[in-house]
Image 1 (cartoon, protein in one colour):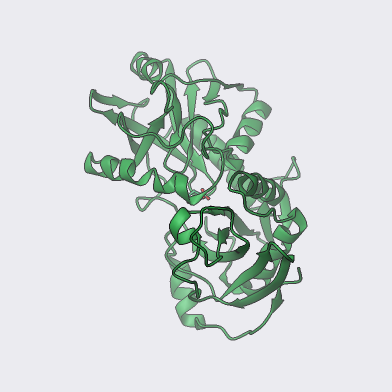
Image 2 (cartoon, rainbow, N blue to C red):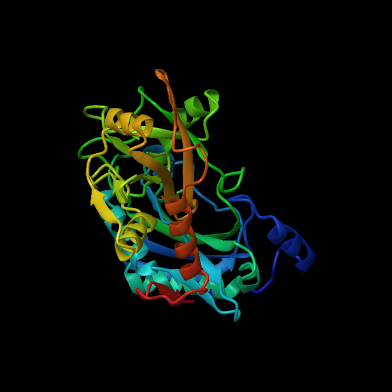
Length: 359
Ligand code: COI
């Protein structure tokens, strides 16, 4: 796939782009171009192009609109002080997209083609990558969906893949502030044998009512417990969860098949090991975590994901009460891990694990 650019006309002028980049927020502004490739059951991956960003033409009978056969990825392009543009562990996103594709009966996009699509969008949208002086980036959103005009329930014979890009500041509107997290006792995000480990739209759709319930209780996020016993922590609506103990251990739920295999999650585990923190992937039983918060045995908790990076959790709420994490502020280990991860991403310290790829 060569992702040839079909037009170089920008829809956004320089002044408007500068105004957007001054305060991009998250997920509200989009660049001038997008990459596209199409797969058919007969021909495999064929057409590919970079075209002006804009609305898609889709049949109202396109299978994705009815049966949700869709997957996506999220990664960021970072500008370094010398102007060069880098992305973080893109091959891990490529491989996760391939695993998600297998689970959703979609075609796998080879890693090289995935990287080519990112390169093509960032080359076309280079002025949209924020300056290195900010903690901002260009969020890249590859996605793939069933576009065949057919209402029978089976894997689509036509699939479209796009990469859109969106300049990004902090994911949460309040910035990197301690989150209030609502523990839902009613809803689950994913069950055994389901799609929980895949990055598919359906998982996020199933989280929305919980997220609304959280907002109604004054919380920023919702925490889902495992669907079978409703006792162990799975994840938030779109982020993995970590705890830091008083004796210097870092705990996160083990990957059970219903938890998203976060790239940020895996990177934090590695950085924590490097620091000599005892790292443990294990079931995190909610009632025990709440006891350990009350006793001070757990001192910090945080949420992580590509979009949110690392965000402290300050408080949990549930029907049974309220639990403060540490002093309710941002923990030292949480902020140190956040700083180290972003320092690597923005090229401010050595990339000792070889995680960066130049775009
Ligand atoms: C990401 O962190 O990149 C995601 O895809 C999750 C979503 C909350 C934006």
